[in-house]
Length: 122
Image 1 (cartoon, rainbow, N blue to C red):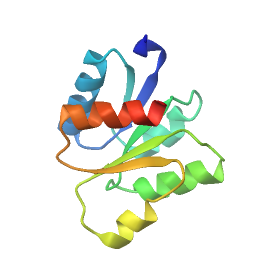
Image 2: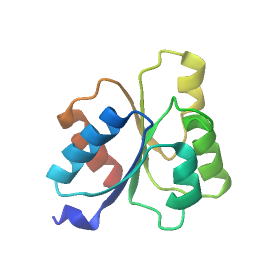
Image 3: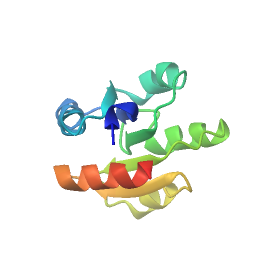
Image 4: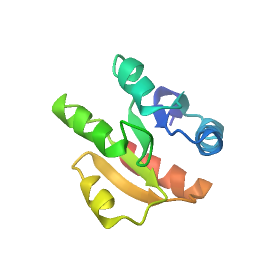
């Protein structure tokens, strides 16, 4: 399968995490677009939607839940992998949506990321 046909967007304000995820996915031959803020993604990333979004839950406003709300309002059904370091049950519950394929707890290993993204694309 030519994974270059699959476009993955990573939205994470942590440079190290975002770059690591990007490297892992690019090494697996995915086409990756990165956004360092959720606002940049909402301003620019909705014009050409990817095949999957990897979305950090805890970011400066708008946070991941607010991004999910916006995507839901726009009826965007792109599969989403939520990543987070939080243990806040209310925040985790708020992230549960039909389009959310998985909520992964940081730190996330390369294999876990690749398996989850593949699942989201299937």
